[in-house]
Amino acid sequence: MATAAYLSKHFKRITIIESDDVLNDTFIESTPAELLNYHCRLESPTSIGRSGVSQIYQIHILAGEGFKILKELFPELADKLITQYGVRGNFIVDCTGRNTSSLRWLKENLNLIVPTVQLHFGCGYVTFIGERFKTEDPLLDAIHLFGNNCNSPDKNTGRYINPIRTIKTDDENSLGVLSIIGVVGVNSEYPPNDSYEDLLEWAKEHTPSECYTILKSTKPCNSLIPYRRIFDDRKYVELLGEKWPQSYILLGDAMCKFNSRYAQGMTHAFRHARELGKIFDEHCHKLEDISYIFNRPASTISEEYWIGSTTNDWKTPRLKLITTDKTGEIRTYQRGGDSNPTKDLEPRVPLMIKFLQCYNYWFIRCAAKSGSLSTDLVHVVSQDCNPLILMKPTTLLKVCYMALIHQFRLSNN
Image (cartoon, rainbow, N blue to C red; front, side, top):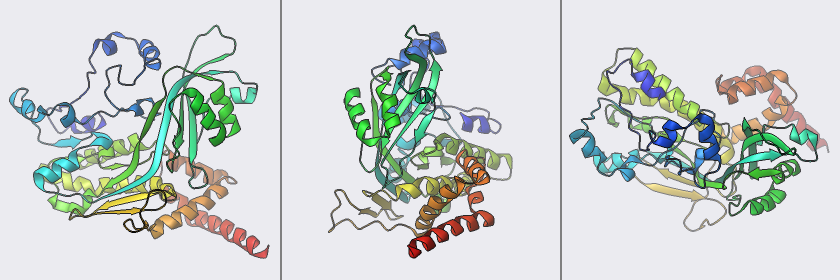
């Protein structure tokens, strides 16, 4: 929608192709409150008319839902658009997200292979909507927003609790709050989704005591929704230059998908849309040239998110790295788990990633003692500022000083 808004100034007609029945009676005739009440008690996230994926139940800062690949749902769509509906386009934007079929289409129809890098780090979620009830700890009851991320290899599980609405209830023990609750595991340490009892048993061992107490006093309003098809996938479209097809671009997750540790996925797509709008606003490019002109700045934006997200993923003990070069040669690197020492090479961590892993470790400890550094970190997480502000000369000196002092004390002991 953001992309369409930017391009509406430059095209007489914008056509958005939607695979789901978003104009069904349930959507149109229900109030937002009725929709949410109905949604909370669904057996499946697809029951309301959104085919999508189970990620519908997970927190999205800019709420967006995935949808199935158009070609799978409508195998004859390409012909029907032209012959029956008269839908034509001078410029095509692939916003189909992480399940895009563009790479397969480019290879099959244009014999064009896009270099890619995939990081599989064994990530999986279990998400549900639950009603919070009182615990025996008033301080825990006062916490409505709660969360912490995985930090492999030391901590391979994370969790989050995010309130979505208040409810009226006659139960004195209810906190009157519905929350989205999620539990995440990496390194293939997946939380169970067979039953809530099994999840509680798992949480008792794998989560902090306060988190387990909150989960134990929460009543699920819907079934547990798992999602395990999570991996980082960077498509290096900028390396193809003018070989890239004219008037055709990938945007957002279709170009680069990553584990959104700080819910940066939708903003990534919005920044791509804004960049595309800037290029059109310059009024100095031929339409057929815009696609590969766009690929350069868009890839720079994606690289920023890619490095920020994958720096921690590289630390996963059971990491699987899959690369595809311009010739189509696929190489697999793997450590731990089911890796075959005779076939799978050990993935080599890039030097810059090693540096960032060390730097981030000490920066977080400096930020815990500095209001200004904490503020800079918040700005970067919320994507208000470039991540390079975390490496200003004064900041760099503080971080290095703390690390050196720590090493000096260790050597003396």
